[in-house]
Image (cartoon, rainbow, N blue to C red):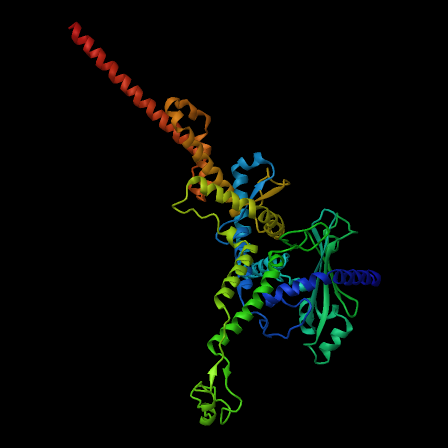
Amino acid sequence: MDESRTTDLLDRYRRLKDDRRVWDAHWQDIAEVMLPQRADFTTTHAPGAKRTDTIFDGTPLLAVRGLAASIDGMVKPKTTRWFSIKASDAELNEDDTVKAWLERAEAATFAAIYDRRAGFVQRSGEVDSDLAAFGTGALLISENRTLDGLSFRSVPLHGLYLAEGEAGDIDTAFIRLELTARQAAQRWSRERLSDPVRDALGGNRPDQRFEFVHAILPRAERDPRRRDNRNLPFASIVVDVAAAHLVSESGFHEFPLAVPRWDTRTGEVYGRSPGMLALPDALTLQQMGKTILKAGQKAVDPPIIAPNDGLIKSAQLFPGGVVTYDARNAVKLGGRKPVDTLDITGNIPIGREMQQDVREQIFAAFFRNVLNLPVDRPTMTATEVIERKEEFVRTIGPVFGRLENDYAGPVAERVFAILLRLGRFPPPPPVLQGREVRFEYANPVQKVRQQIETLGAMRTVEMIAPFVQASPEIMDNFDADAIARDAGEFNGMPQRWLRKRGDVEALRAVRIRALQGEEEKMDAERFIDATTKVAQAQG
């Protein structure tokens, strides 16, 4: 990689930084009241500095945390396998050897994602918070340094600069890294570093910090017949910014970042978030909290009022303090107290009501009222349950559909591809070799849709029940086996509890043969009985 290409890369990096300044200011305002640990967009904080000085009400922080937890529970719940692997050719999915291999691959992929050493739970949780507050998050999915497992790392938004491809998907990322000289040497080896970094290492300044940029972008020129790092579809280039020095160049088979965006607008690379919608109310709530705190302090510890010449010395306002006043001046006051509290007429209850209204607005922006909708109370009719579930799907379904494509999908598919290259799966059956697989995702939104279908079947049966009594053949219109199997799946019943279709057919065949045997036995007994009676009559 020649010097001019390195310069072009750094020029593009700086242009992306300049183009994002408006976003940085917006995100800084959001972070200061909703995610203070991420408030590094336009300001710099010392490590360990307190970042909550301007926060007087924690509702926005709780709202972000609640939505982040919902994202985790709905898109990628650890307690449920949220994806399945199928052959692209639907007919292959009926092959027992193919099904067995896909199930093993699915289990291995899920186990690798949630391996404790990979750090998926912690790092994806950081991405969920970024997504709820800022509308954009980034999770780097790669192999670990020993190439025996996975490594997940969240990329802080303040050091991430993105660009879209022609189709509108994120295919380019510049990641700003600030590392000490010692960290850089551990990551890339001393020989690859620039002279200033090596000088810092040799001059007993190993903790001096340097700026690097890690560029991940489609490789324009490559030989697809070669599979070395410099001919993979995506380039991975690390440059020392100050020295304009190439540190490392390699590549990725797939774009290694999952970049979920909450909501996008035409012409905007970064997503918009519930935090942006709630920002005015969040700022208002902080001012209201400050005002109510002041009013409450005045009500509990009101100001003192006294004539300027009525006291012998300054009022002792601490507990147990003694106030000495001039009795002659007290007589002049006409019997009024020489020292009294100032009457405070502030209306704290109204302030609290207004504060609660704003809190509800913030929680609504973060979908708390919608995420709590699908609750089946005993007092609700089936129609009410369906209506509430349909409202849930209409409101939150499109958002979580996008997250499935931009978040859950890239994670599962990239992990599967890495494990496949590492040889973590047994050889696929011959019929599957060279064939593509597809991923299907199960999230609560889909579950709710399926439950609506189940409730719709129940309503249909209730509606036609009077007609079935008159014409039982109406039930021939329904496939009872399909309804039973789908209802079990829709309601979360483990598939291992269901018999295979072939086993069901075999069981029914045995039952039919047994019934036929019973009928034949009964026919034989009736025949023998009739024959005996005829013989007795003739005798």
